[in-house]
Amino acid sequence: MEELKKKLKKKILTEGFDIVGFATSKVDKETQKNYQNFLNKNYHGEMKWLERHFEKKVNPKKIWDKVETVIVVGLNYSPGTNPLRFNAEKSAANISVYAQNYDYHDIIKEKLINIQDWLISEFNISSKVFVDTSPVMEKYFAQKAKIGWQGKHTNIVSKEFGSWLFLAEIFLPIKIKEEDNLIDNCGTCTKCIDICPTDAILEDNIIDARKCISYLTIEYRGPIPKSLRKKMGNKVYGCDDCLSVCPWNKFSKETNEKKFINDNFNRDLLFFLNFNETKFKSYFLNSPIRRIGWIRFLRNVIIASGNSKDKNLIKAIYYHLNNCNPIIRGSCIWSLSQLLNDKEIRLLRTKLKNEKNKYVLYELDMLT
Ligand code: B12
Ligand code: SF4
Ligand code: SF4
Image 1 (tube, rainbow, N blue to C red):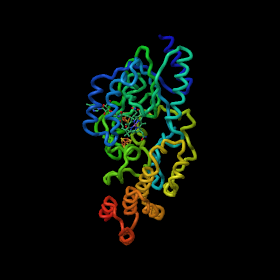
Image 2: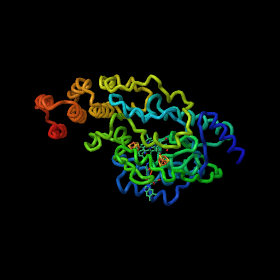
Image 3: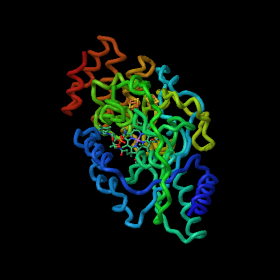
Image 4: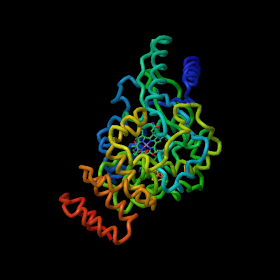
């Protein structure tokens, strides 16, 4: 078995993963209780699939009855420099580092399938592979497999790669000895909790996803809650603040995966405000951003435009007041209210006197 483990590790690293570990396929009682606690408090908001996935998540045998070992692999996606500096660029569209080029799901899946094929051809061992979207407790198994520890921001932190690791798993039907657990190295640090713009990290290891900018910009379909709009700043897809501030990043090096880097990435809010749905789909063809669809992305760009205080964006926002989706019209009203003077706001009210949608009328009522 030691020989197989050695060969597996070598193959996984040759495929381009940066770290690998092995864990038994059981989820302990305390983690099950904590997951249930997270759901009971409704911290998952609209992500109802986290409820539906519960049984499978706490019992991987319900995904595949043969599973004995979970191999956890990590891929370093460190940008090499600290993305926190983009928060200050008010007219910029701040997009999470993980979404600035190719979709990591596709890149990782390809590598996992190569390993899966190799396991069959070399050892006649069948396996199942997962990345992100499946009901696997990725962070829990990563900690068990000694990839790192679950930091206070709830993600896995590695001594070698800081907070910049994507996780994926290979389920094996054979028993391989688990690594010893890694101890928590957060110590007294609270930097990730302190920096969170929306106070989404409630306590060590617990977040209220409903307040998290990543959730609001990627998962949430409704109008961005009024109390959180200003706190979103210039973020239009995801948020990296709690990861970027982590002191363990000082040991990380820029990713070797060239498909994650894009030096010519456009960060201009006006550029994105001038998109239509066709342009959105073609521009983000290979990006994870395509998954959230044009309307959610446009909603985020419009809110960030309001936060920019950049009057040059007014004309482009006005154009979207004609959008047939009320969430877009409502977001435009709030955004314009941040950029227009009193006289211009009165003109805006007149322009919208025929508006019938209740939600949009509510946004109009809220105009100061
Ligand atoms: C749902 C989800 C989200 C949600 C919820 C986040 C969350 N923390 O769970 C949202 C949309 C907010 C999100 C955001 C992000 N995500 Co996400 N997400 C997931 C996903 C699909 C499921 C995670 C999950 O099961 N959450 C449910 C809760 C229950 O899990 P938990 O936080 O670990 O919950 C624990 C605590 O609540 C705690 N707890 C609860 N009550 C109590 C009580 C006590 C007393 C104690 C001690 C503990 C405790 O115990 C729970 C169980 O361990 C995973 C992929 C996967 N399949 O696992 C990716 C994943 C976690 N995401 C990832 C990433 C990269 C991000 C972002 C950085 C993306 C971005 N830049 O915008 C942000 C980071 C935000 C953050 N600080 O977490 C990576 C993290 C990689 C890593 N190194 O850990 C993952 C693993 C995807 C991947 N394959 O790489 N994500
Ligand atoms: S991703 Fe951003 S909003 Fe979400 S917990 Fe981290 S710092 Fe807070
Ligand atoms: S910022 Fe500090 S508390 Fe947060 S995960 Fe990193 S080391 Fe832990």
